[in-house]
Every structure is written in structure tokens, then in C-alpha cells.
Amino acid sequence: MKYFDTSVILLSILNDPRRERAIMELEKGGITSELGFVELVSYLSRNMTDPLPNAVSIINRFNISVRSLPKIRSSPMGETTEVVHFALRIAEEVKLRTLDLLHVSYAVLLGASELVTADREFLRAKAFLSRQGVEVNLLE
Image (cartoon, rainbow, N blue to C red; front, side, top):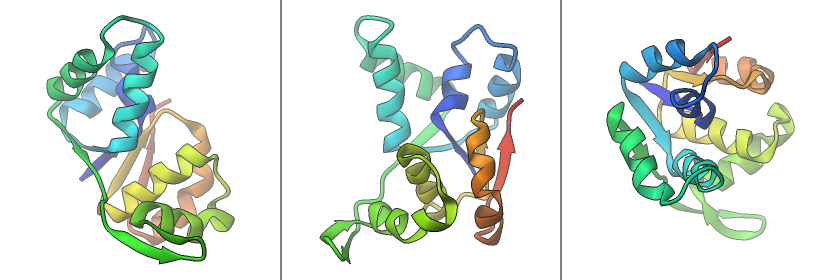
């Protein structure tokens, strides 16, 4: 199952040389996280009116499932969501920016076999993801 980082979803609507490749990947279907959906709405809100229906339309166009991880876990800070708990545990190893770290966490916890991204930063987590059974597919 493919996990789509927000960068790939955005490429489907941008004038970018990687657009066609992104569309080909998205048309195969897959998942993104609630984080990916929020990032999409945030981007659209800075570039158009009424971003939520447009974001839903983009997600539906490619039959992407938006997933969440509502499970609560105990952490040194008290109770956190499962994705935050996992991100805290892997942060030192993968050394990514916060949102990328959360995308990596979602991809692993949601059981993705592939993380599709247009962001080269994810290559920093390639070895970690490989050990988790997740391949990084960088659209260049």
C-alpha cells in the first residue's frame, strides 16, 4: 500500500515537471494521513477561497483514503496519540523536520509498503524505513 506525502498530492495541481509522474502514482491509489489532508487544506487556503471542498475533490479524484491513528499511548509527557509516541521514539534516529517525522511515523504505523514523496529530505529516513518494510519512492 502506498502512503502519499503531501508534496506528491500537491504536484497533481501544480505546474511542475514532476506533475505527470505524480498523477501516475496517485492514480494507483493509496493512503495519506490526516496530517497530509490538513497540509493540503492549509496550502489551498493560501491560494484559493473555499479550500476544504477543493481538497476533498483532489483526494476523491485519486481515490486516496485519509487515515488517522486515534489510539492513545503513555509517554514521558503523559498521554499522547500513537503517532506522536512513535515519532518521539524515532526522532533521534531519523533526524527529520517535525512534519516529515510525523509522515514517516504515519507511513510505518499505517502499514504502508511504500512512501511516495517529492521531498528529498525523506531520503534521510531511507535506512530506517527500509528496516520497517517501507520503500521510499522519490519523484524527481
